[in-house]
Amino acid sequence: MPKETEPKEILIAQAAAKAVNERRQAEAAADEADLNSKKQAAATLATLNTVSAAPASDLQNQVLATLLQSLQHDLSKKQAKEAEEEENLRRLMLARADGIRHEKANREAAQNYCDHRKEDGRTRIVGQKLSNNHLSLMCGYCYKEFNEDSVPPSLRPSGDFIGG
Ligand SMILES: [Zn+2]
Image 1 (cartoon, rainbow, N blue to C red):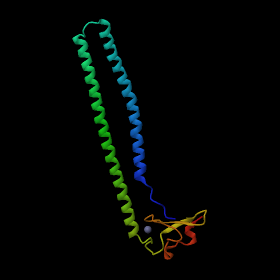
Image 2: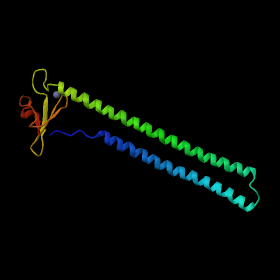
Image 3: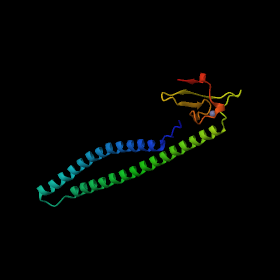
Image 4: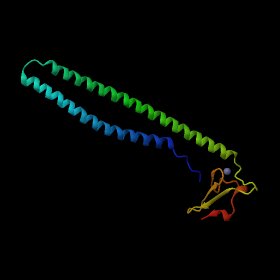
């Protein structure tokens, strides 16, 4: 029974995207609280201006300018951080996908090289009988998998090496 290779790249990408999403949501909540307190400060300033009916003092103008600057700064910082996170995630995913490809290529090369025999010539393939009566076989050295159709007859293990 040939086992299909798991689409590990996809699983990793999904897990990573989920982690980033969760962190973004937490950050968004914190940002919103921060923004709300700033809005409140701005509203207080506006009220002060209205109530006093006097022209806005230099101090009030200064506070407003600082507030706006701070908001602008927060936004740029957030955007830069998000861009950096995305880039890091992209690199991580590429590196992992590359690692998996390498691993798979190495395993396949080893499996092609392996003759699935011990030094004395006996088969290294062992396995078990499944409940559906098919055989699940594997080389104990290179882990190449076989079933009753794909195992070369000369390498087929004797009954002693097939569990049930
Ligand atoms: Zn082998």
